[in-house]
Image: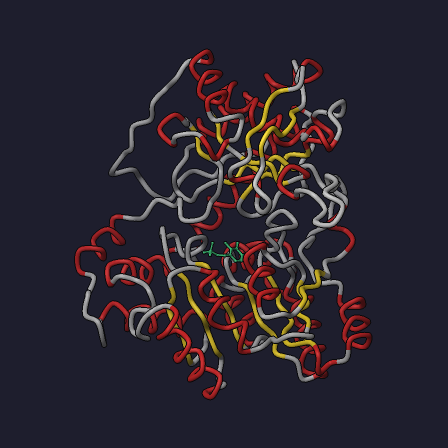
Length: 459
Ligand SMILES: *Cc1c(COP(=O)(O)O)cnc(C)c1O
């Protein structure tokens, strides 16, 4: 049994939850057309839809909200963000923006244009969209170990550097606008990337003269995994590991809604290229707002300055990653497969193995997500064929590499007992798994259908 690492905080403010009956939930999910995004949040007991912007702020951060400086120019809250970010990342230039995709929108068109390529260990979906909006193409280049959900590998998020070199040679270095290292690798299941791997990628980028960017949404969780699993860093501090990693790159974009433990915010970092940073400032002014607020209110900047520090605290990270490892341990005991070893922010349950009688075109991961809501009021989502959608040319349903039901855990929000409710619900569903039916789509929009599609259970 995996030991639960107790919370390094106590609770000062609570948010009461409504408890519905199974019968009431059956009614609610039917009204929502079996789409979890269609539920009212107050009808959800444990919300695992995402860990993005759903974090609980500390008493320090709430105090910061009160002293946030709302001045248009030169606000003290802006300076607090810059000072803390410069110290943590070791970069000369920092620009706040309103969230991660805004950082991508401001920076990526400065590096990419029509006919070029971005290569990443895996592009997050908004990153891919912003690459493609410049007219460039996005290529994923993750190690093959990531594709085997049950095989153990310490760093399933790593870049396949052998393939990276082949891709550069094939397309020509001058056509590769940027190499992007996403830490942790969200799309592979929140999987970490080793410092050794980042060093290799950085050396390749340098050799070919290509800008090396970090997508830093979960950089602190990544640093904790490095400390746990990479012997060289066994005795290093989280801060030292972060310095080591960021010194290898030229720029970073970051969604602060994850490891900076706030509800809204983002950052762009430029290590030393002053000319590039001036262009970032210019685009920020037209797209986000003046450089000293970047689309953020002063109170949100103040909370971000504090959250950046809290997010790299080792006791916090041990507890945070410990929650994931505890939940994964309960699934191991029950013989439930997931992307293992578990990553940093979510457990990705292998629904294709959980519901082997439901084919991909009847959406096993969506079926499991609906059952979790009915069983215990848990809201999570499909990361599988239902989310992937249809081939744009043939209109045929595509088959995803994985059928994952993703249980994303917000930071500092749920307790051990909540995690037990989740594990118990999965065990109960496993007992009746053969009776669970798949779904068909009755109405869908042309793009990003999973947010608004309407489904019906198959008889
Ligand atoms: C969330 C996320 C983004 C986008 O950030 P938003 O704040 O949601 O716009 C980009 N990359 C990764 C890896 C993410 O997890």
